[in-house]
Length: 279
Image (tube, rainbow, N blue to C red):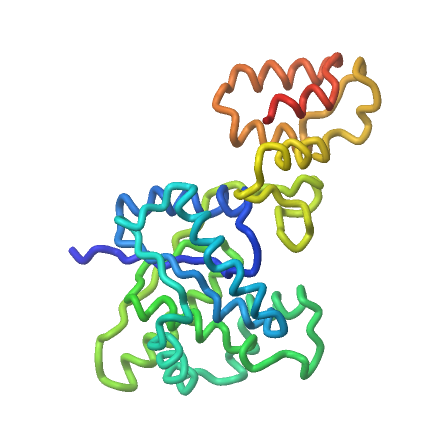
């Protein structure tokens, strides 16, 4: 039976953070033990919304690679590569562009969502941004990827990549590209330290993997807790309390976390003391 090939990656538009670790990096460490895995540093794709700041992208390429190594991704088990250094990806993208219509790209739900999120209007959407599902299809198929870890919001990208692969095979009478299966992440979405949005480098609510102990401590002390917990002796809420969300994910001492929750709920545990237990 043919071994599944995993393709995943990140845009080097900023530092990787704990949200990346919980959402994908930890899973990649496990996947490399079971599959042939490729991880792409997508510097070309990062230019779709950083075209005016290529230095930012360039500066983060090596940093992202170092973050991979730091979390346990092993180059002896996983092939890490930089997108711009593989010219065949660009070539395959050009060929694929002839196999998909502009109207189909405009109907892609992920693209439509990204356009709304970035508040692009009318003709301000660049051809490169609109066509990035085609580039992603080339990224996956250049390594004959058959398994791609994604969230539910990225499923339309996999669907379109499969459409392109099938069209290529049918048009040229070959069976070159196999069907791509999505590997849906079961990981919890990590909230940012603001407790409102998911962790994001652009929102300034992230704990970066490269942060030193002092910076981590400073960010933890800014974490959202229970806004109604004004005094130490008052009972506090655990639900929606970002500190407890992090403790549930990262503290292996389940009994201690339960003890802290009970203490906080009955009163007597202050937010400052609680936060200090997380670092």
